[in-house]
Length: 168
Image (cartoon, rainbow, N blue to C red; front, side):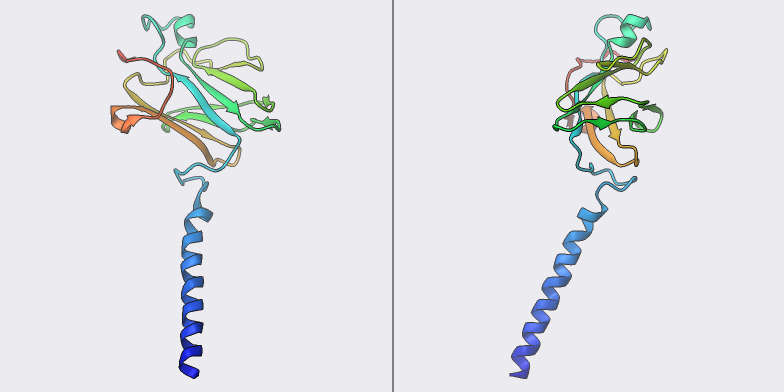
């Protein structure tokens, strides 16, 4: 009897240890330095990483390079403090922008007047690499909420939009 009770206790303790181990990666997800996305209704949508036509650095050409940020949920989300970045070099920080349920906003590389449908990074140079790149969206707690990659350096890419690059 003592032996079978010991086995039952050992099995229960072993199962609890396995469950705790399995829960660790889920708890770690969304940490500021964890590359796995934090669950959010706000995600990256279409990306135009290769401005159509000649890359001449004009306002028109810079603004034809953009990333869409979508709220797939029903409730509004304030994007103040959220960031959109290309690696660690190019970071755009959202100001006060409320993204209503099922609404999207385009984040243009160039400059212009911000509206609820279009915001501008006010850059004079291109952000997104035509051949390969990664767009990362982080919330106001610096947690990754979505990542989109494209090109040959990222396994064929998961990104949207864009065309074949000729470099910036």
